[in-house]
Length: 367
Image (cartoon, rainbow, N blue to C red; front, side, top):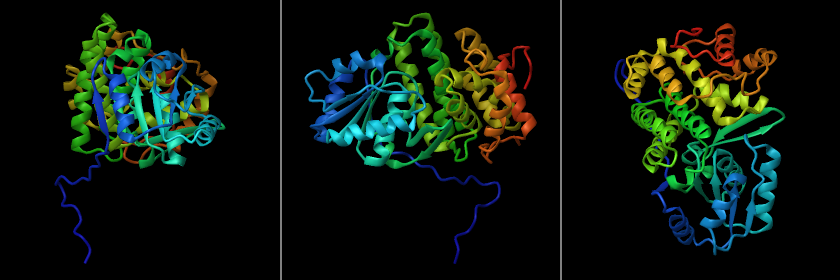
């Protein structure tokens, strides 16, 4: 006998919570990282670190027997870089991969874990959120491939807001809005559910409240801590709900045109929100409440004005002549769960608006 199907108009969903330990505390990264490595019994860790975080990484692991330092970290994780890192892990008989830095470092550590099943310990220095998901992504020949695999989920995440203080204000803003994009996409992702929605809306609230404090006083740990907590909630929500239209657009743009990751997400977000909000009034209402606004699109635009956020794909290096190719590439990736039907013309309008940079909800060009 087959199981009964869902009853119309009744709430039915399946939620997956990923197994992960989180150690959160300002000034505690070194102690927490060492404790985790001891618990794992690690004797030969490999450290994957972005160049900007190299000095911090060496301070955190001073006196620890690191088997290999791997600093050749490139955004969007080219397959060639992944293969080099995997070879280094094998050559040095590595037993744990530690990532220290932004999403690119975490992504490269995941690429190593994908084929080696080595445990990953992530120490984020931005609000990227990759550390809390089982999603991997690699780029080859201008195409970014992504997937989900339990082997790449970091076993433990060590959060320390002190490690984000050196992040420039502009990057802090872009990275925080990248986290907010995780929240917004989670409201209508293919596996969206009430648990993910609750995490996402709280993530939006924290980010919207704290990012202005980060801009006003970049050295203030309170704003940095709560923004980091919001970014974690955003990533957990996104891991449950899956990639929506926003992330499909950004995967294509990042892989094909090598645009800066965080800034690209910040630019695209308002335009996807403006496109989808009329077809998802419940999600738009929750988002508006989290932003402390009457309207989600206008509330996000006001936050962008306050933060002096990145505005256009044109400023990030995308050429106008690239828009038709981008439209065709994204069109084949549109998730069926998107609340509003997407065709070539509507998608071209969204990308054109993001390229021009007029924020919807501010009297600029509507989507």
